[in-house]
Amino acid sequence: KVLTLAELVRKMSIIPAEILGLKDKGSLRPGADADIVILDTTTEFTVDPAGFASKGKNTPFEGWVLRAAPVVTLAEGRIYRWD
Image (cartoon, rainbow, N blue to C red; front, side, top):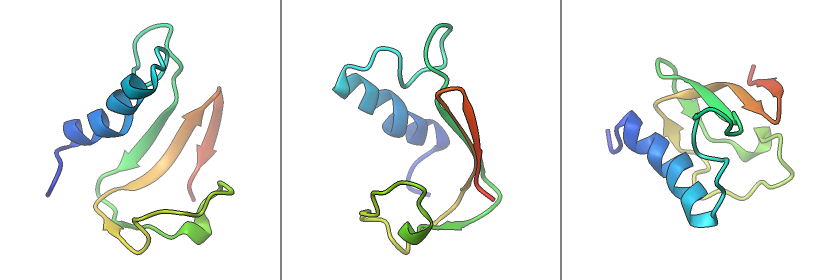
């Protein structure tokens, strides 16, 4: 109950794209890259770096229980499922 869903979207996509000057990121406007994560807001998710697909395992959120779980990621035209 710290962030609204709209605040989360802004802080995790729009603001980082603006800071980094990435004009085709952080938006779903026509012509922008459609890199998105679909969340299930009815499921809790515990952050566990061992399950990260990335080589990077560093996170300050290890062990945190989040009030939504990632279900699908769309990136660079590919679909990645989290199950």
